[in-house]
Length: 141
Image 1: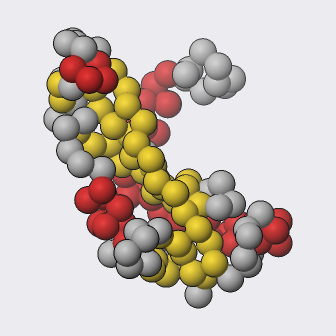
Image 2: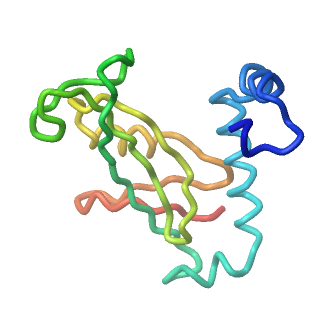
Image 3: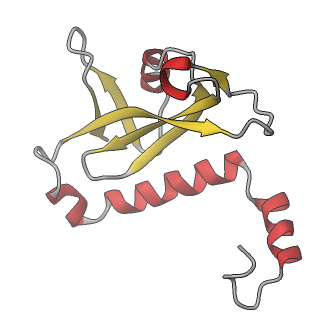
């Protein structure tokens, strides 16, 4: 990354990564960006209903190199053969805003993470889960 960053040395980038790039800081910044985007009219134009913001979640599977140790990596012959992999589980809304992501073990069921997310409150959104259909949407408050 230092090769493409003009005027920033590898040492400075490493210092920034060590002191400022935490999961908490990244989540806080993401929430602020989403909250700011809520104020933009163009975001509401992308919704089928301006009062309801539908969401979607999906897990993308990625191979992990054999020489890397990861507590989230697991074996799944179905997806990786004899190699290990992880699932990057992401939640996106109707306006194409990524409001949550999480890396999980490939052997875990993804459905539990949808329920976990419905119990949390991200930025100024109120999570609500419809029963029976298991469709999740965000209602702007």
